[in-house]
Image (cartoon, rainbow over all chains, first blue to last red):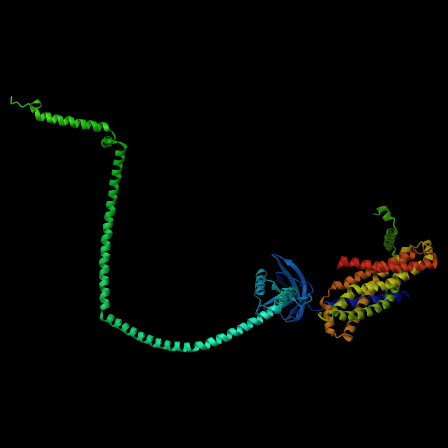
Length: 335
Length: 253
């Protein structure tokens, strides 16, 4: 009985273990005997790219995301486990993108040699390559949920706009639009008749324009003749003579200018002397004004003037007395 | 507001305290390996292997119904391969462990409570104690160990059959190809999906068998008492499964 129990229990447990192991390996895409290759890719952000997400090459699953971890300088490094037999491009890069509308993400391996449309992705890949030359550069496309949300908002705005247009475009507006169209039709008819009436005038105008063109051609011919005359005058040396005379005049003018410049230089020198004289005169005048010196005192002090005047009167009287009585002042004797 | 002392003396509090004391006694009895060792395989066969058919039966129909329900739910915008995802995730994470646990709570819990309860009312337990046997080592430990070890085994088989049943249902009754179902099954798979269900199943096994033993040893009052305790063992076992299910969801998910 004990052996039977052991056999039954052991068998059940073994079968269960086998089921668990096989199921786990099968569900996890684990291939026994193959050595998967591990590579690292550098991203700014991986968004929804989690451990276990598929890694695809040209749409075919060739591995899965093994590890996602933060790196220095705000980078994220994802370790990808790839099947050994995968033919990786020479210049690989990884794009993390949503695989469907339901939140699945995948890591797509692309070749950097292939043209990339999105400049933002190109810039992100270039930055990742610069930051970590040993890692595959990675870029993340926007979450499709965000895009659909954006599209939803745009659709909502369009619906709102449509509602507003619908609210504005009621029957009154329609009648006004119809009236406007009628007016426009009337205007078109009038414009047509006006155009017809103007057509004859335009014909007349065209004829006159043709005459004007003929006159213009004649004037052009006259101008051509005049120009040819000028040309002949030039060839006979008359203009050259004028030019030569002008040159001579210019030379004389230049010499006169030089003389004038010399004269101005002399005047500038005299100006210096004149300034000096004026300064001296100003000084004298200042002293005179201040009553300094003989002249200053003469101008300022009336006593001297009065005395001088009195002296002059006395001198005149003396001269008159001398003239009257010379012997009183002069004696001539021989002995 | 209830006074703490009164709360401590209330019936639920006494039951929780009694369960804790009982579990500690059973843990202490683990040292008496010579007593429970020879009985373990027998209990593993009775509680585990003999429960496999009922668990597989439940899992079979759970897988079928889940596949049909998934197809019904996902008609429209959701891709049809998500049938595989729903069937796999639901059975591995929740329905496999819980439904199997419920079924075994009925079968195993009732079995243990009725057997030990009958031994109690016929004074066989007293006779064991008279012969210096530790009742915990002889009656409780082999059953609890067997339940803890075999519930995950039964649950794993149930999960495998449930997913397989969902697969064949999707192929035969729904317009789903094998590749689509497998894609849905594998797309969000994590290894945690498996061990999470098995850890839950082990805890369910321990709880159901402990409750069965406790109710059996607490039996009194003849056949009516055995019936009452058997009913309580099943009810408390199912409640414990649901509480533990929520607990593991909070702790592990």
